[in-house]
Length: 260
Image (tube, rainbow, N blue to C red; front, side, top):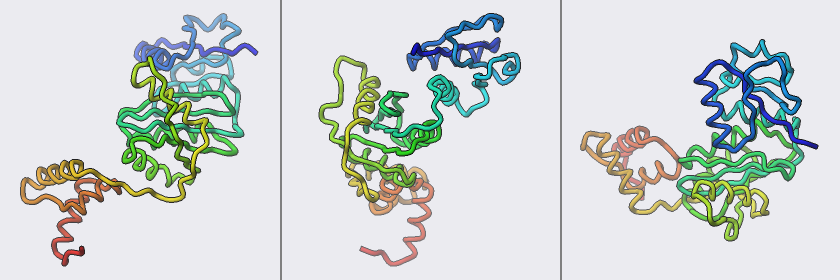
């Protein structure tokens, strides 16, 4: 079965370049279409603009600027190419670190791999994958390294109600690649390894340095009036409360006798 290709057709230059940038970054094959008269047979889905969608007469067409991101539109185009509405098994692999890698494997096909510049963004990427690759069974698998970041990511994912496993990633990181490619490659490998199931939120052990940084930021926020306690700083790190909330919490705590 020869895989069909994405076609790109739009006279909106800004959208056109955004589309090409995403497709090239993700190494997805595409064909630029200058006209809609003779669409090559190998084109399985066409990405266009919301304004031009009615000019495209094929049923498989996506208005790339009608979604929350170009990536989202490209994901849907790939989904149309594969022609699957429901997978039997989807594994989402995460390589934890300062810039985590995330990959999704559906029924043994690597559907996507990417890396994000902040561990906090993992949750929204995973939510997007869950929306776009519905499955009978979905398992999220995360590498065992970078314990604090890993546990923070796990604690954000637990709320999704999807099985989360911690995987021994010792042999997954490939060499001879740029760092962000390594992360996403490792994430793809992690997706395919069985791990131990996480039953509940995991403890976080913030370093003294991390706590100090949060306390310094709180002092700046209060204009030098006071800095939050170590206990409240831990809440910022462990529970993800905002610095503003932490300062309010501290003010309220100051009015009450301190607990040990």
